[in-house]
Amino acid sequence: MSSFSTTAVPAAQRLSATRSLLLQLSAGAALGLVVLYGVAFAESPLAHNAAHDVRHVTVKPCH
Image 1 (cartoon, rainbow, N blue to C red):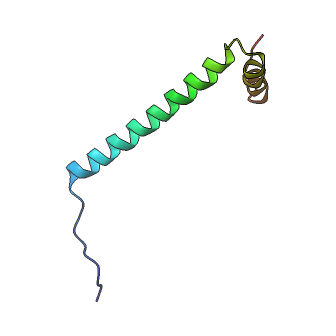
Image 2 (cartoon, helix red, strand yellow):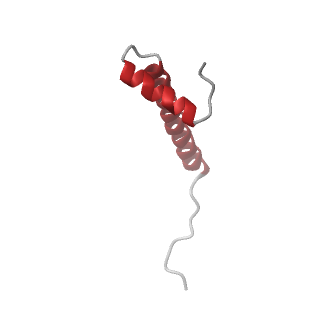
């Protein structure tokens, strides 16, 4: 005999968890884009050159 419960997770709880995960992933992606492109157009030469190098490494056009 099994000692764990076989009760299913309610559909509303699964939907809530899925929405939470999608929100977190979207927020993380948005923050990453803001940081990457915000630094790319920064006045600081060091920050700008670092972002520029990332664009070359990821084979994205920049010129």
